[in-house]
Amino acid sequence: MSAYYETYWQKSDGWTPDKGVNHPVERAIFARLLKPGMRLIDYGCGNGERYGRDMLARQIDYRGFDISETALANAAQLGLNVARIAADGSLPIENASADCAMCFEVLEHLMEPDSALIAILRALKPGASAVFSVPNAAHYTQRIEFLLTGFWNPGGSPLTARKSPWRDPHIRFFNPSMLRRMLEANGFEVAEIIGEPFMLQALPWLYKQEKLFPLLNVLSKPFAWLGTLFPGFWSARLFAIARKPQA
Image (cartoon, rainbow, N blue to C red; front, side):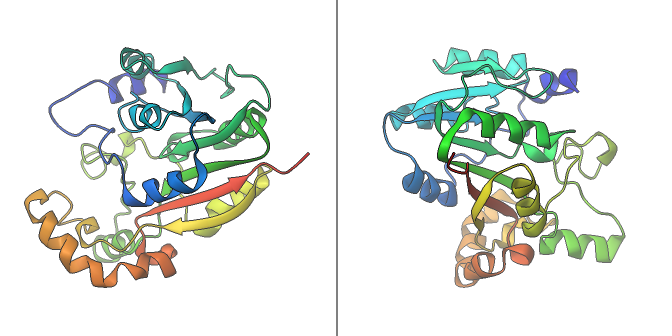
């Protein structure tokens, strides 16, 4: 698995996993939870290009962790403070030393997501918040594709999701209730599950049509509320804000 993610984080001219920087929902969550000087741990930081540089600009004490040496080398070149996640999922950081944690688009890749959650909980100060995001396996596009074709799309990478899904990096799958149950089972208090706004470009036959995205954004706006009110069906991506219980 480690060797797979070395390849996963190698730069290419095609799709790369660091796309999607500064999503509006992410920015809103960061504005609520983060303040300059806070120590933030990023579990599964990747190459640092998606969030690390943004956190430095916010004057956050950013500590990134990943399993891929390729990704960590890139992140270090950006001037980020990064280190490797141990084989058992633990982190080289002091207990109860972090003010906040983020783990975005990571848990669905892990054979043992419980280990990641235990490590994050250990690193957080009592009462500190953590933010998680995962793809919504119950999204309406997934349901439509399965209904029409009988194929359930893992959705990890356009290079593998349909062409060779047995090689796809997504191996764990969540809907809102399953995400909540997993976090609570590992000691977190879940404060909120947030969905992305409804987006037409998430449809399988439209997600590559980047020239159409401006038009699709306009057409989607009147229905954006669907993802907020009914994230289990209309939201492609789920966010969870959770807290470490007070000691």
